[in-house]
Length: 309
Ligand SMILES: [Cu+2]
Picture: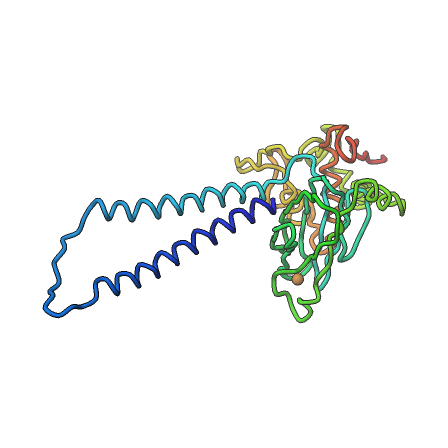
C-alpha cells in the first residue's frame, strides 16, 4: 500500500511542479513579449469557445485522475481483507495497548509477522488519538465510544515508528511506540512464549460470569437473540431497519442495548456501560465473532457457552 500512496503522491508533486513551471514561464514570456510599446493600442478580443472549453476540460481530466486514483487507494485502505489477523487496540493518555487474538498483550509495541494482513480494531479509553505508522502510510483516528479500523500487510522485517497523530494532552508527544515486523518463524517463537488465554476464551468466560449466557442461548428458548453465526450478517430490527452485525453493532448492543432492538425481542437487557473495561468489551466482541467463524478461522469455530441450570 505504501508504494501506491507514494506513487500517487509523486504524481501530485510532478503535476503541481509542471503547472508551477508552466505558469511562471508564461508570466515571464508574456510580460516581455506583450510589454507596452510606444504607439501601440490594445485590441478588443471577444472570447473563444474552443479556448475556454480546452482550458476547462484538460484541468478537469487531470483532477479526475487525482480523484479516481485517490479513491481507489482510499477504498483499498478502508477495507481489511477477510481472514486478517486481528489486533484489538485500546489507546489512552498516553499509551497504546494491544491485544492479539491469541491473548498476547503488549504496550507501545506491536509484534506482527511478515506477509500477513493485520486488522487493527481500535478504540480509545479517553480522548481522540490517532494511530499513525508513517512507514506503512496509514493513519487512523481512534475514538472513544466506538471502533475504528485500520489494516496493513508488512513486507519487510524491522522496527517501525508508531505515533499518536492527534493532539491528546500534555504528554501527547510521548505517546509513541513501535511496530516490530518479524520473520514468520521468529514471530511463532515470540508468540509461543507465555501461555496466554485466547481473547475469545476470555470473552467466553466473561459471557458466563456477567450472566449474558442466561438470556443469549444457543437454542431458541432465550429471552435474547441467539448469537451464533450473527457476525457479519444482516439483522432485522424491531423498527423495520436492517443493520449488519459488525464490531460496532455488537459493542453498542452491549453498552446501549436499547439502541437497536432485534425484531421479535423486548428491550429488557441491562446496560453494561461503565461496568466493564474496554479490554473486557473487546474480549466479549471477540467471543461473539468467534461464534461465527468457520472451523478454518483463526480461533476455530467456537460453540456457544451454555448456562448451567
Ligand atoms: Cu494520543
